[in-house]
Length: 437
Ligand SMILES: [Zn+2]
Image 1 (cartoon, helix red, strand yellow):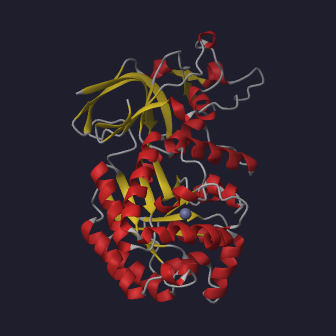
Image 2 (tube, protein in one colour):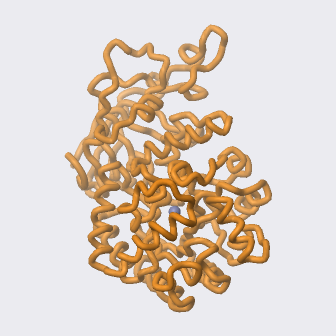
Image 3 (cartoon, protein in one colour):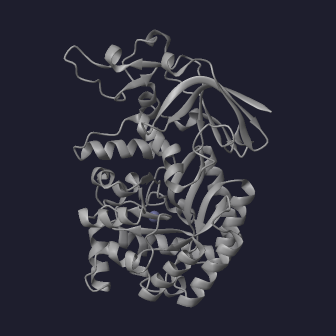
């Protein structure tokens, strides 16, 4: 039995945000078996009416709309549920930092050559091990990942992630055109291989296979349709990319008789409540309605969009259309492996678009309980009894005594904006110390 004490990152499902409460969790076996709070929730929160408004009645920046948690005190640890990265490429951790190219050029010149190395299963396995250990060091315990077109290597990645105890999904990338010949498969064979990944790692597995056509440009209409049919038949998760850059959208229009990009996927049966669409930067209201109609999920990857100069994804109209949005690092176009930094980048992107930026409390929710909710994972993302004990122990060093309890700054905002990955002291995966400690 392990007991972890500190300020707990607790989800408030009604307000879709996080609060900090003093307490402890007990871990037994693979699960959290007990959560105790030292105080009632009210005593841990400071009402905005008391603290959060200035003399003009304006809310202070960085505070949550209703109330916020009391400041962190020096030496206080933060206990968080493991973070969720809803879009990353296992094969691309080695190419982080290839700067200065737009998407399609970056794919041709950097990504495809790197993915070729995954034809060697041993290389793929050792790379996956390194990547999964990196994720743990950044507090990520659940993820949605792409591999490459290589089947055996994808199986090896799924096996390893399962053995290590991760929660999430991995998909073999499906491509049958407009990519180097040796990275394209034969259409039917690719579908057979995707079906095999699903046989071994079915949708109810803790680490499941996902049907993963890379994006419309590299997939023929028959491949997209067969992928949609397979996903429907197996109730499998689907991962793909959508409308990341304008150039890509124009190319899709050329390839698909001027169809709307979203409609290409819709017609192939690829839009489902278990579909995660990376990026969705260049869409309009009609497209948002289509995504909402199918309950599909958008993975917003702000650091990757910034890195490739793809554009700024506007979350506001998606939220207004009731489309769930989750966050992804999109390594290796994304350069930051920390989901806390990705969440901060999402705040910065919203602010740069002139939207009311999400609060830090809601950004923390995005990378924990909010993502788990959207992805339908009911045993991760929160510090709850009966949940998997995927837990991050954080020791921030910014709290100083003179700040007392009178600070006007939300500690969740401080934690996010002053974030330093060295504060992560230990990551538990399914009840076991898997990194640090
Ligand atoms: Zn991606």
